Length: 277
Image (tube, rainbow, N blue to C red; front, side, top):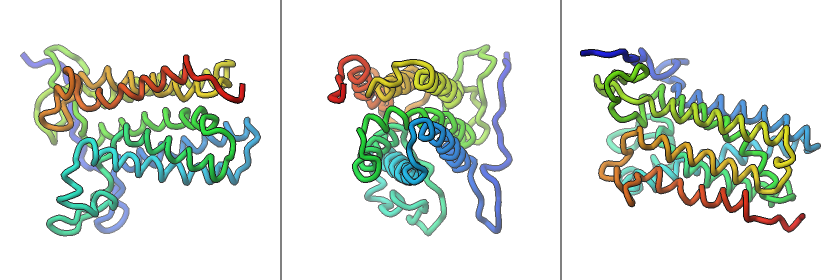
């Protein structure tokens, strides 16, 4: 017997601007993520009496760090054969194998983005901010948490990182029409919903509690919450790489990669002692 389900069958994957060029909904979600992130950090920098010039530099370092990290993370963790098969497509939004074609960066990994964000904030702090790298990490994670919501919504628009077939009777099961006719768990939306709570929690703690001033605490909390959501939601998603459903000890690649971040998060929340205290 058929059961209630949501049919996802978008007529287009983007907004056409001129000729054959269009902005994909996934790219649009990234743009919105960075715009909202900029607004959040502008409010924080005003509260911390930091200059507009430092904010503009922060935006540049953040965009480059997150995008480069996300792209390299995807290729290294999930598609390493691309280095050999189509090397320049790793770094450029084009496919060169079999003819040049604009694709955009459709392979981006959140674990790589996290590493890229941490690295770029280290460089930004050393060259521009000149405070403590944890000072900026404690604040920029608020913007990152909000951005993560948009990215997973973008994955839903793209019908990618799809969920496993849903059990019969699940009312919010989604059929991704351009994939198959199987009702599936909307894993992307589960993750987006989880990240919404991550954002609300770190935002509230920064503005309303003294814990937000404990160096390293918000950074650690962000890693703990974000990657815990990832570990939980992964059980509803199909393996992103064939043969890695049970990568290590029954955990898939996304779950395995999340565990070190959770440990780091716990360290900064409960063990780390600032030298500035």
